[in-house]
Length: 255
Image 1 (cartoon, rainbow, N blue to C red):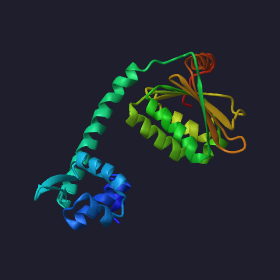
Image 2 (spheres, rainbow, N blue to C red):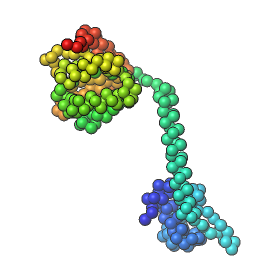
Image 3 (cartoon, one colour):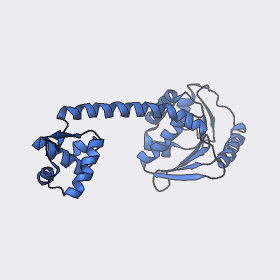
Image 4 (tube, rainbow, N blue to C red):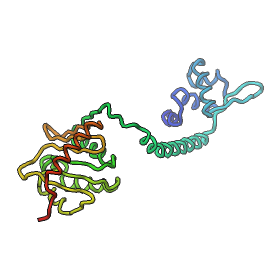
């Protein structure tokens, strides 16, 4: 009892048991504390030293003999407050450090990384990565069959809303002219997204998105999945191929 709570204040199990036993008897010699806690002296000496370092107990001379005294329970509240303050300060410090570290990090084009995701929730993680990248994105393929997995209107509305929140990047889309896509294109938000449509008889159960130095490949072949490839060289050639197709398709015009 109380062990887990004390562990959250930085004690291990033995230290917590030592502190609780000392709190129960008030003040004690090492021998009496060993009997009360059931902890062997050899182990107890180490726990006592750690508890003194952490401020949970202190020593006092009583009749020329050393006695161990526990800090009052109120001390635990102050300890918890200090830990919370420190955690908050650490979180703020790390948050301010992240942008600087991102600038410091070198984009290494000498290697690529590949990660695979399966299932609706896992694949949505890839869409979240695209959002957080805060980069313009190039989309190719897809079709109604694939996007039915997310409810197209709900997906586009939420994805677009989040994209605006993350920094209003622009998307370039080469996709089949199915109903939902045409509806979005008719909004004419050319500063936010542009469309160029493939032929009506072309539809895909897969699609790709190129953003930054990454390529996301989505598929509905034997279940919903996505593969995320990171690599500067491979993303550059994929972007070049996308633009070749883009330039050979007509811009969408309202009928």
